[in-house]
Image (cartoon, rainbow, N blue to C red; front, side):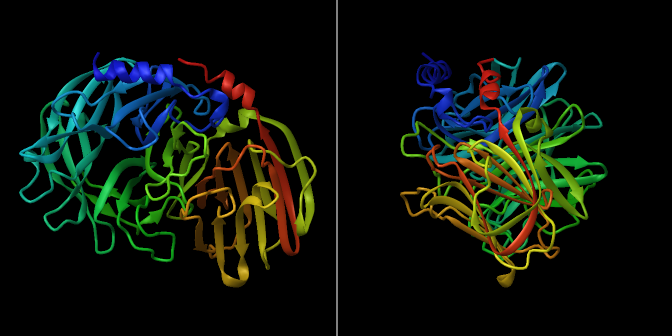
Length: 485
């Protein structure tokens, strides 16, 4: 039996029951998942592949898992798409990209192998019909890089087509071990040439730039990166692995940065995002909602990690803004609306509870004293989101969420200069995503909290007046629409 069929049989035989998993956040059927891969639209469906090791709860030889959706909310499992079983990818089918081209679904991924006793990373091609993919082997190898550029750190291609030319960028290290993005071009997907260093890291911008993504919104070009080994700058960049956006201009050879690095998520669990252009023109982003430093999971889970809620991207005042895809609203039910609601001390609001929810708070007046939410609560168990104007900070804290390991649990950031006027909180089983000021900031976290902890508590040090719109999410409809493709 070959490796691909073995993986397909294993995931089919060991699939975790749907009711034990999140309702609308994509997660693996069993085993380990990390980076989103090949996010694309093909044959009327959104396709999302992902780094996948079905055989354990931990990272291992990387496969490509595969799921599809008609509405970006309900995800249907497809058979595992790629397995590490050929000479050019025997050590792993690492992250990559997908593109519809001439009626075919084209995948480009990093194949990991060994050469002269050392690991090497090269870019490989596979072509398929949306279910079955035929590998076509190496298309770009390390020998095509300029002298001194790393062949061991050369991964995560992003492919696009512009004016009849295929462009491919990938993460790399230069001769000094600094992060950079390299650009290759081709006229036929088979014959490639090195074009340029697309963008080079500056000091303190990371030792390796992983998972580059490139797109345009209107006339504005955007580059997304996931830099490793960064240092906390007190403005949303934290120690270790980050995900950032840079606004700029692609001149055909290089990317001219026009902004500093902008953090994409200020929470605890977000990395390696990918985007695609929806047929209706929206640019949609999905990221890995976990972290290498703290892969949080509930005690009895047989699967690890999940993806973020898909997010619509826009640009406002020189900043990339993210909001939940509009399709989420089609699963709202049991809506409640409150106007001029006064919050004082710690209180609960009748009817406002649950673990599958989407609710928005609009503050009727500036927040002048401590205001907080306790989510997924029961007794001493909760995850807190706090606004503290006195100390000029906003923080997400899962310390009391039921963790049994000493994982990083607190993320503290400066309050935005304009203050906070609106919060939107989306909860699914084992996750919380908080969108601040219509997506100007986003906080994402995984929590291991048991589903029975469903209280939502409001805390105000001084009287605070809000409008509140609350929706439950129709879990039954989501799971019905998630039956296998």
